[in-house]
Image (tube, rainbow, N blue to C red; front, side, top):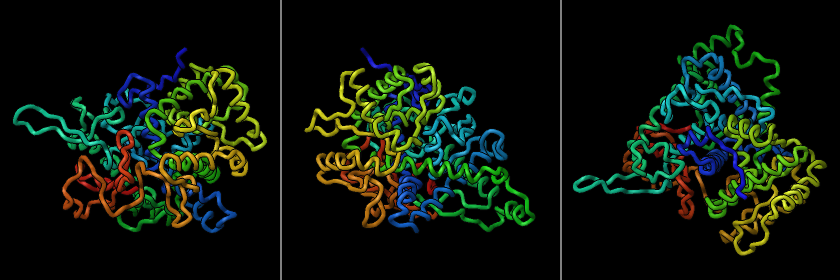
Length: 507
C-alpha cells in the first residue's frame, strides 16, 4: 500500500511542480543549504549560548547576539508586514540571514508562532512565476531562501546546450527541480541572463528594505556574512536623522511599544537555540550521506509518521533525524502544514520541543514500538551495516536536556557513520571545532565562511570583475572535495553575483 504524503500544494506551486514528493525534496534541498549558509548567523550562537558551564562569557555573548537577532526580526515584522508602518513603501521586503534564521525557528513551533505576520503575500518579490494576484501567502520564507541560494552561485552544476549551426551554445547551470522556476525559456539551463532576471528585482527589494529599515531605526540592516552582532549597530548619518530626532525628543519607536516585547524576543532566541543541535547533526552528516535517495526515504517515512499520528492522536511521538528534517520542511510552508494536517489528521500536529526529560525518557522507544507494529519495518535503520546512509536515529535534539540525549548514544553512532563514509569523524556535531570555534563538517554545502580560492561558478565573470568597490565581501567557498549537492551547494558569501551587477552581498 502506497504511503500517503502531504500535498504541500503551495510549496509545489512555488517551485514549479505538481508532485508533492518533488516539492518536499526541493524544500529539503533549500532548507539544508540554508542551514549551512546561515550557520554563523544564529545556529552557532544558539549552540554556544547553551554552554554556560563551559564558558559563561561566550555563552552570554552568544545569548545577547540571539536576542539582538530576535529583536531585529520583530522590528522587521512591525515595519513591513500586516499594517506595518513601511509596508506601502516596501511592499516586498527581504529579510537578512539572521532574521531568516529567527523566522525559520519561529515557524518550527506552529502551535505558538510569534511572528506569523510574515506569512503575508506582500513579502513575495515581483519576480515570482505567477501573477501577484494569486501569490500564495504561506511560502514567503522559501521564496527568499531560494533566491538567496541562487544568488550564492558557487558549485551549481554546469551545463551546456547546443543551439544549432553558427549559434553560440547556451551555458549556465542545469535546471534541476529546485532551479526550474528560474528557467524562463524551459531549455533545461538557467543562463546568466535568466539569473539576472530572477535576482534583479529581489536584490532591488533587498536594497529598498535596507534603506527603509535604516532610516526608521537608525541601525544597520545588513552585516557581513557569517557575523552576528551582540547589539544593534547604530548609524550616524543624514539618512537616519528622523530616527535620531525621535530618540532625542523621546518618541517611542513603534517596535518598542509593547510591554511583552522582551519576552517575545527571549522566546524567539530560545527557539533558535533549541534547534542548534539538530542543525549541527544534519550538517555533520554532510551531502555524501544526506543524498537525494536519503531524502526520498525520509519523505516516505514522514508520510508513515503522519499515519502513526493519525492512528494514535494522544501519543507523544518522537521523530528520527530524517523524519524530523522533512517535518521541518513541511512546517516552513505554514499554510501547507495547517491545511495538510487538517486534511490528514483532523488537527494541527504540534512540534513540541518543550517536553521534559521525564516525558521523553520512554517516548522514543514507545514510538519505535508503535512504528514497528504499524509498518512492519524498523524505526531506526540498523539492518544494513555496510551502507551507513540508511541509518537514522532520534531526531529530538531540540527537546529535553543534553544529558538525556547523551544517554541515547546517537552522537557516537553518527560519528561512526560519518567516519565510515568520509574516513574521519566530527565529534562536535558539525557546528563547533574546539580549535577555532568554527565548523568541522565533513564536506561543505553552502557556506558563510570566507575562503581564499574561488569555487567553480557557472555564471562567474572574469577575475577582474571582483576589483569593483561595489563587489561585496569577495570570498568564495572552495567546495570541500567537490561533490556537488543537488542543484547548488555552496555560497560565495554573496560575492559571486557578477551577473547581477555585483553588490549582492552582506546581511
